[in-house]
Image (cartoon, rainbow, N blue to C red; front, side, top):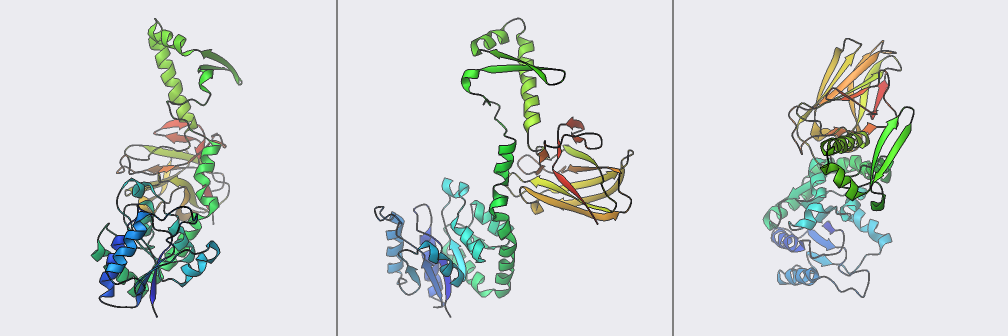
Length: 391
């Protein structure tokens, strides 16, 4: 009848098992059916000694009289047996202190909890804790607070309705971490790489290239050594050269950008298309969140015909938008939509820098008549990555 809390991995110096052991000491004063199991304290390479936190954790558990009664330190679990431990446990737990590793970590040991549908109690401050909170996968607690951690552990184990809800959320969330989805941002970049303005696509010895196009694809390439370019910048035509280089950089950056930029303030993205069938009932737009949880409302507006008759306005909160996923905007079916020109806009007037979403741009489908993409009213090459669907 025991309830098992699983620490799904080794003990590392940048984590905080000490607060967890102190919390178990508090719990042990109230009940004896909760057990904490550390899956492994030995490094898989026998020549690598354990980290100092292992000794500290064992010493603390001994001093509280918890070792072998409430807290158990396992030596090592073979990889092929890990699933058995995960499926037999009642709660996953991971605690850490606040520092640089915490902010930029992605704790892969917690992926095992997602796979096995194991609700979690974790310390706030890292990416996975944000997911646990936003997706409803368990509870998060402040750092280095044994009392708050003990209360959260008891609540997570005793609240049966919450546990069932967390398990449902874990099952719904797990597909988002499949390989085909998590590598999509990398695949997008590989298809359309974007270079920083202070970097070059070419080796350094190629130097600077000025291009000018002539008619049907003809191009003149002028390779200029850095010292010659500097003299040009300072000469009689220096102002013109500097302006030309700045403009070419902006145009190149605009052409290569795989996203429409932060949709915020007065920035508005407009995409046109011609409906292929009757009963148009929704638009799926490939959105991105810059890997953060955004908070403001996003407005989707649909217009029809050359006179831009407004059909519908849909308002959603940006926190509902998932990173690098197609977000659906549903509306009542438009019965005679076949062959009609439609436009939809995305805007978020209240969003601010660092708290805004964006939309992916597809350059493999060049914009043409009825398919123009405009950002703040200016025509943009390519088109938004979107899918129209029909009843």
